[in-house]
Image (cartoon, rainbow, N blue to C red; front, side):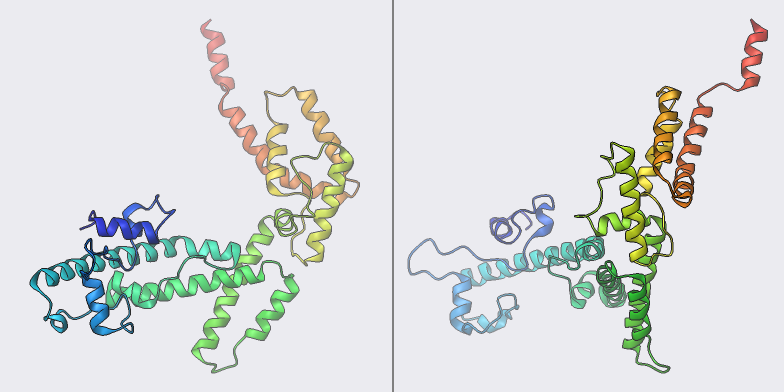
Length: 319
């Protein structure tokens, strides 16, 4: 049934551009082809004539209600109903699976999910009456946290804390109020973790139009200006942790400083210019601290690729 002409034609109507999903993105309803001969009604048209325009297109029509049809027409309608049921099941299953996988990340990034979100009944249809409601609740709460994350993303730390205080339910509050608070609190924790982990990258992403291009800092003056901007933006947002550069930048600098394919003198000069550009001791310290992990990782890799002193001495003795 998955390869019948009716399903293929309908999928082209409702799932254009989704070739990557193929047959899994079949539509929720199928349209029967029109009759080839003028004056001959298709099963769809017969149903519409009998029940009027008020019948929902996806609603299953009991076969016993249309027993007045000819045997051939009844068989055709039954086959079409079966195909439509299969297509609905496949389309609903694909929608639920894709939403579970993609909706939280998409909503956290953009604030909304561009596709139709699955309903509680979709989850029941896919996972059953026991598992379905539980998975739908998980989905609902996860997407709620993602939406709260998106809403809080540009807010200052102070504004987020104030929002949480206002949302905190009173003792004995309703389950709905408690859940709303827990959703906001979970989103706030994620926001704070992201800000503490890489605050300079966070403000660079938040103020993308004004942020420096960290890959194109050609002079010490450019570097100093970029660090000044990043630290000022973090302080304006009220971040608990204020660092000099995005972690990606410091990782790149730390790795280059121990890169044995680059002449040592060149590495020293490049790094010295960066430190000289930072007049504030705190800026220098945080920059050096940020570089340390990648530099140590590079040193370990360098050491792992060299023979140990014992191996070298043993080789010399053997010679």
